[in-house]
Length: 598
Image (cartoon, rainbow, N blue to C red; front, side, top):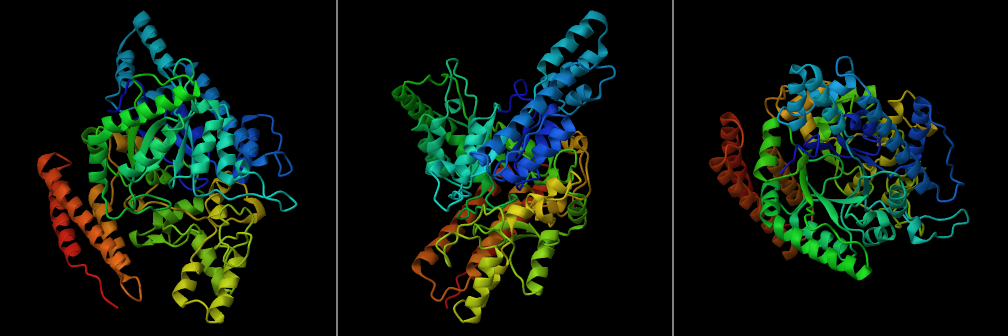
């Protein structure tokens, strides 16, 4: 489905943490590569705007906390800076000579060899005179920047208060303020909603004209839904369509084989999920189109173009050109997302040198699914990060928890009427006292002490990478790579990574790396084993039903993969043979998993 005539690249770089992709557009959008910026931490974005304003010689007027609607205005100002900077880069590239220009040649050299513009570029190099000049002009006209999309994690939506402690109106909550900053910015791109439905946030999008089609059917601000299965896509898509809001893309992500927060399904595997999207794509489009058109008609708004189609893409654990190509071709995808491997590409992401060194030296056992997130959602973590070192050191000194300045994840009202963060020093001290008084168990306490300050830890690297110190000198970095990164070793150039993605030249991966479908299945079997090991006083009927459903879904997924590898040339013969034996082994392991009665 990927159309090389309308899009420069078949992949995008997803959001990573709060800061690792915060300035990625300035690095890669000039080459037509799309990426996603988190807009949850307005303080970090303000620091970056100050830094880049100086670098790009753009006037900088600080937006402090006393400024009216400071959060939305900081986000808007930073996004406008990105928009201005990237457009200037594109203008500069278009003025370059093909004979001497570096960036203009790099733009086309990074494209896949099968891309129409890459083939035209190669043809141009062989021509002379007026024919060559005409082709050069066509190529320059084809140059366009990658999208600067933004991410809002829908669950991060703290209600805010004024300086006198009075609750502010709903539109000043964290998520709604972030959406307002994006909606009022100059960007022509999309917002990625992740982590499930937030009705207040989705409803608030109705307030901004840019989310609706204009007289020509063009939508300036698109909506992308990150989903883990078809049912979620349909429910959320219809909710938005009833408001006249069109979903420009469904971004399917593996429940476990991904970076950051992990949203495990009940054993539904990505192969069958993609098959369901493929088989129901036309129906999904028609349901949403009809619903959306009716809502737009009722509102008296301009209608969608008759030929509009939502894109469908996949991200999570892809590691080779063969996997990427099979996913796009077999499931008729409009593209893929490559995340964690780009943490090893300084030309694309912002990882400070110390953390980069730790990633390169890390072992497979250093990547694990943790309880670090104050949201209570499993979180992919690195055992050897400086953030983990700091967390453990504080516990050792009997000073667990973090000072809580940004308060983005302050949701617990266990000890106070006003919500506090479970990673904060205040909360963890109260939990320690509770344990000392015999009012909580040791496993519960240990899980709480595992909570880490993601607000500071996930934003520090981008500031450190600029040669500056984060506010209050909080330099410890928490990093959240997916398990796939364990199989990549080294630091790579942008060209090396893109050549790997497109099959021009392969990065040497750990030979033990399983195929993407098998890796996810292994992770789900581990997850099931963990679920079965939980200490539950009495295994209820509900728990037993959940486990049986989980096992059934995994078994059906294995049967699907066994049929797939015998029906399609999914990869090399060696990879396919390995898959066959691994699937059999995992099938036997699942069959042997039983509930242990208390």
